[in-house]
Amino acid sequence: MSDQANDPKIDEARTCTDPKRLTLLAGSADPRVRAAAAANELTPARAIEELAFDEEWLVRAAAASNPATNEFWLGELVRDDDVRVRQQAAAHPGLSAKDLGRVTKDDDWRVRALVAGNAGAPEETLDRLSQDAHWQVRAGVAGNPIASMVLMRTLATDEDWRVRAQVAGNPSAPSEILAALALDGDEGVRVAAQRPAP
Image (cartoon, rainbow, N blue to C red; front, side, top):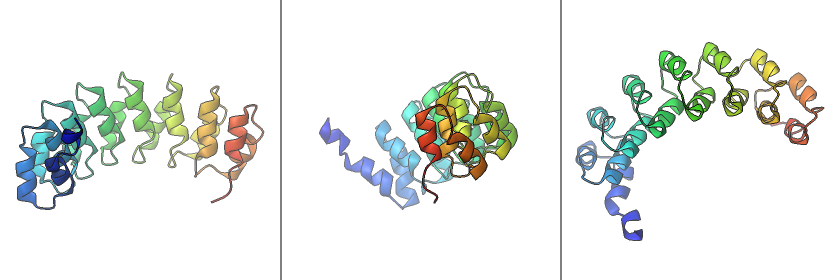
């Protein structure tokens, strides 16, 4: 197994800068090589398009994580049958506002939590996710640096201490919210709120 982990073609697909060679590697019979090519930012768009519909979830997930994957293919990947692919697409900063909004209704809380932490999420999306039943989704919003002060103020009073701790750890949290959280009933929240200034 260790020989496979150090497969030179996987390393080549990760580091290759030649578009023609990357296209060839994207057609490999080994899904790990295809996944490495799918994650490479220099892989040509046409190859990424094919890899986004690969039969192996790990290849599709790699395509969903590639910063060069365009908005259209991300929109397809965020509707994938495999939750691991949807998670990668949900976290992608290039996901459209429309698709980010659509993902707030995903059945899997892990996908919703990744959208909640996505720095490209519009305010309406974050507002919807701040009311999610799952604490980790609300915590994603609470820790998102682009969350509005209104959302942070609301989440600073969340019933779950882990959500309040995320607000306290948010680099964008204003001093008035941090001052209130420094008096929180939970020690973990108080400690997070008393972090040193950047």
